[in-house]
Image (cartoon, rainbow, N blue to C red):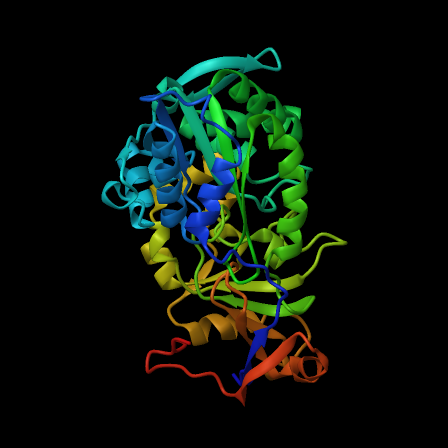
Length: 418
């Protein structure tokens, strides 16, 4: 089959960026004037989630140092629902793989899947909280603010979600995702977060917003009583600064890797246009991508292929690397079992692409609109087929890195690295 020629292009975003992350974290925390709230020797639990937040180790280390300056005794709590195979060891391994080690950040990591019930909302929904965090004098909630991959509201993914899904661990995360079906996402997230803030000693939140290049755009320390108000405002900025594909219509999107460090759904549904339906865009949703091919899993996802079911095709290596148990646990906990469904797989990239292009509609394969990206988080540079050449030439926000050329495959028929 004749495949389209590909052009390597660069997207140019207006992307704000924090110059000095460590100083910014400490200045933000100092601005909350917490001296009277933290007594010498008070224990302070600090959350670390499973997402691939830029410079998360440095951010966490800076929080630890700021807490120590206040006289507190900090420790790290992995806060990631059912990720890590739903085990304490698995979750600790994940935070350590991000560089958040006891030696680097300067405090203990306490990982458990045990929770305590701290209250009830809606008259029947128990509120669960990490056992170690519940026993602490204070809790610091650190998280990235971004659009949720499955829900729409004034509050989506961020500090509130960390208090529910992250610190609720496997038991809480599974329960809340079921409750959302009956009560709605917004209603549950507000109710549970309110109960947690009232009863679990939340000291402050550290809200992180990233830009289109996966770099830190903003860091802000937020008082607990301002969580809802500020998270609404920061979500607007996060949507403005999130990376996007440069075109609204795509026949085939080739994604080099998906993973939990990239998105909770492996590939960000906001980026690929499948937030509401798994295999097509909603009527007013863009981009509209006909077929998705996933080539690999990220090393950081540790075999968790949650979200694999969003694509139509995968390379066989994805299936081989998939930790079925971890993937199924994660997808069922999130009440999204189809996210673990394995798509059609083939042994090489060339065969995968040929088969995918047979199903994109009435278009010759060499004329198909094809994009190739690293992942849905890093979209500064990407490959686009020459079907887009005319549009690229007209766009001031796009520039050509390499001119159109045939795709490079190795002897086995797999695409060469960038």
